[in-house]
Every structure is written in C-alpha cells, then in structure tokens.
Image 1 (tube, rainbow, N blue to C red):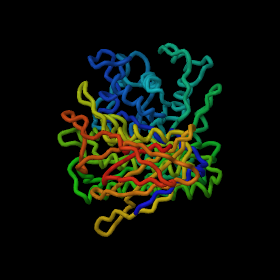
Image 2: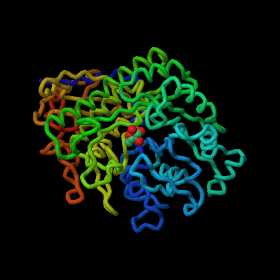
Image 3: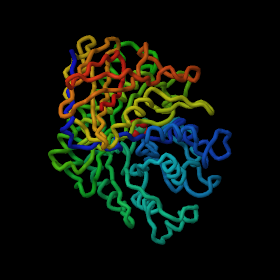
Image 4: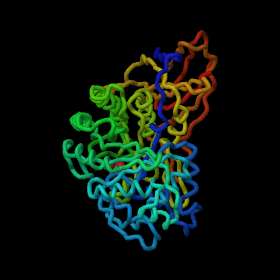
Length: 492
Ligand code: AHR
C-alpha cells in the first residue's frame, strides 16, 4: 500500500505566501477585457476594473501580481501610461498580436487593481529598450514622498501620496525577448540599473534579477558569481510545461494519455530545476539570502481554434489542475529557497484562473487548485516522506503521488495530494508522527474524463467536492484517492 508519513513536529521553514502569486501581462485579453473594461463599460466595474474578476481573485487571497510583462515589459515606456487617458500615446504591441495598445491601463490603474485585490504589486522594469533614467524615475514616481518634478507629476495625475512597493524586477527574459543578452553582460547591466532603483523614505525595494530560462544553469552560475546578495534579493526562473514541442504544443482539451503523461512529467521537471538551481545558489549564497522567484510557470498549449495566435488564449482542464497541484507542492517542499512565484497568467492567457466572454466568466480547474491550496500560505512546511508506485507510460515514469504538508498557526495540519495516474485509484496510508490526530476532512477536484473542463455552457463541470471524514486509528488514516485528482485535507 502507498504511504505518506508527515513529520508534524519537525517543520522549520514557512511557506511564503508569495509562492501563490500571479502574473498579468499586456497580452491578448488578460489586461484589456480581463481586468480592465473602462469606466464607461456596461460590465460592472470599479474605476474601470471588473468587479467579478476582483471578487473571484480575492477568494484566492492572491499575494502578489506581476505586471506589465513578460516580453511586453521590455518594450513598455511607463510615461506613456500616465495622465489623462484620452491623451496617452498609443503603441503597437509587437510581441503579442501586433495590436494597438492604447495605454489606458497604466501605473495608476495597476496600483488601483492591486489595492482592490489587496495584493502586493510586482512591477517589472524595462532593461531591453529602456534607460536607467527611465527606470529610476518610475521607482521615484511610485515611491518618493519628497517634493521633486517626478512626485509633482504624480500629484498632478491625482495621487499626492506615494505608494508602498517592494517587488521590483530588473528586466524580463534578458536572455531572449528582453534583449538577447549574454549572462556576463546582463550581470553588469543589472548592477547598473539596480544601483539607481532607490529606496525612498522607508520604502524598501526587493530587487529581482532576470534569472535563467529553465535549465540554463550557466546563467544562474554567472549571475550568482557576479552580483552580490546586497544588490539582488531575488533571482527569477521561468519554466513552462508543454505536452509537445514549441512548434506543436498540442491541444488544451483534445489530448492522448501520452500527452497527459508528458505534461505532468514537465511539471515534475520543476523539482529538478529548483534543486539544481538551488545547488548553484547554495554554493554562492549558503545563507539563502537570495530568493528563487519562479515568476513565470504553468502549462502552455496551442491556442483555442479560431483565436488570435498572438493572444495565447487556451482552455484549462483537469490536466492543468494537476500541473498546478504538482508544481505548488514542489514549491512548498522547497520553500527555503523558493520564496515567490507567479503562475502565467491570471485571466484569458495561458494557464489562467479565469476565462471571460463578454460579461460572463468561468473559473478554471486551476483556479480551484489555488483556492484549495491557499491554506498553505505562510504556514510552516512539514517534511513528508512518500512511498508510492510510479506512474509509467511507455518506457518512462513519474511518481504517482505528489504531496506537501504544512501546519498553520492554530495547529491545524494541511495535506495536499495529487494522484497523477489517469485511471488508477490509490489507497494511501497517512501516518502522522509527533501529533495525535483524530480525523481528516477534505475536498477533492476530479472528474470522469482526463480532459474535463468548464465552459460557458457548463460552468461547473469541474469543481471541488467535499470528501467524507476519515478517522485516524493509532495515528494512521486510510484514504481512497481516485485517479486524476487533486485533494487538500485538514487534519485535527
Ligand atoms: O507568458 C508569456 C511569455 O512567456 C512572457 O511574455 C515571456 O516572459 C515568456 O516567454
């Protein structure tokens, strides 16, 4: 029988709530249509921002939101997005569909969105096509309380007080769309740009360097060697899970068991990435001062048929829920180094939480995983040992079970388990050491088909359901876990 052992008395590290962060780029219908409809819209909004989206995301307690990109960040000139909207210059969003960007959603609108979501802003500045001065002034505009031409400009635009802001990205994918730089060159550029991203008053920036693309370990090595921890608080990592190749990623909803397996194998690859990048970081930074910030991750499929290929609009099935559950378990289990992450992207783009159609919206299976997993935010990570059979496909295999556990301040233990097998139910013995548990209660997300998803005609096909309570006998409980499921339990 498969077995999970939780060391309930051994936790040392907190799971930073910022692991549960999100990403919103000026891409397709994420910002425009997704978050922003404008004040004149018939869709209910608060100062132009959709109320239904804010209400749904607040239920996830989203801790941070990364903006404005992505590749868009290195083409974005923030001064185009302030002042009276009708007078803001337009630009062409060359990365994403070649559409005209009217800059109606800019700094003030983003900071208002974060206030409405009650989350922390995470802004990514432009290194690729911007200047040091431009980045320096953006930080000043946002955070400086002293009188200056830049803070006067902010006041003239309706905001006399500065905002609080900590998370600051210095460029995005500088090895690719953000300037095609070599790591040696970027490391020097980072040092120069970061120097001028000032701490005004008591505002303290948490500066995040553009980190590696997936398994580019040389990038990590070079940056860790050349940038002191005093200048770099976080190093980012991007990794997307694909069931196919970049040229043919495969459909989000019509896939074989082989594609199910490959996507989940890619999600599991995050574990190796985190371990290997952490090993490099540990050599340079044994005190773990620099956080690994996985600020782009998630499943990337072919766009939905008939939609703009540059808009990256994809459906979201139970398979994507497994990607979310497995990845979040990996982050929880490596929370000593992974202290922040952002799934790509919140609304209508890639592995979205929410899809919209006019005034309607649906919550995706991935949304439900984030809703169930929020119990881990800021809780103490508990070590777990998992003894389980592998799920094999052809000559390869991955663990059937992905698990993480945590203890909240009130002593409640939470356990999240994914059963990646598409068919086989599993009986699992859950053994808690260091605690005298009585009962476990939980909710599960599963369906009869591997490609089950919510549509605008059937909005609640995939949603969590309550499980019957399971009693412990002599510290052990026996769970029946259906194949293709994500479950979160509360143990008391
Ligand atoms: O999330 C979509 C894109 O993926 C981002 O703009 C870029 O950073 C990454 O390549």
